[in-house]
Length: 268
Image: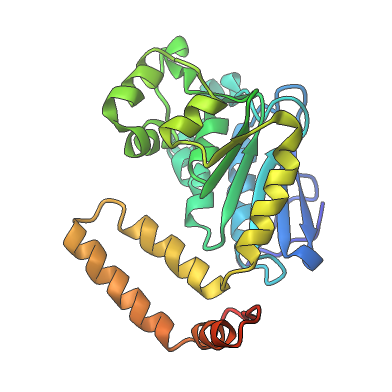
């Protein structure tokens, strides 16, 4: 495992079903699910993933985070037996752990092929960008177990596609393809299976080309105003715009534009 430092917690030497790769030269960190063949995500792993996202958020080497998996499938979901063994208090923390990508101030990309079910889908929904392939299948199959999604899946999905499509997916445990997810606005892009890594690399490099400060500001603003009335959202957007006007990155961006050169953003 790549060395990570969390400001308040210590990560174990061996992570449960995933590992972390950091490439300082590309300012990129990859969280890689690796419990083949289906990359089942354990209860313990959910808490470790939350701590990992928090550690990477504080890591100055990292600009962009990628959540991906080894093998043919992103994840078939959670460890079913673990739900029966977990205490009610532990279960109550699941949604907070799975929402870690959304709370992270840095851009987070989920890159998925094959099965992306249950908590795997919920983790993807908490990310900022979702890249899928033609082989990808999204699903929230909890109805088949006599349950409902418990980590934000139905709530986040309803914001994206509306109540009718969400009921169709949740109440029928319906699977939707990567192509359909893209057409419905759930996935950012759908690419051929062999091109997922190339598309992920390209998006990482594109995001790195922007001001880190402007990226953090945009993500927080959009998250904070998702449920706001239009007038409040416009007001908050104006305050954020005003603050960025005094930043060194905005000055650099304007000077680079007029000089017809590539800006060298510092995040200040």
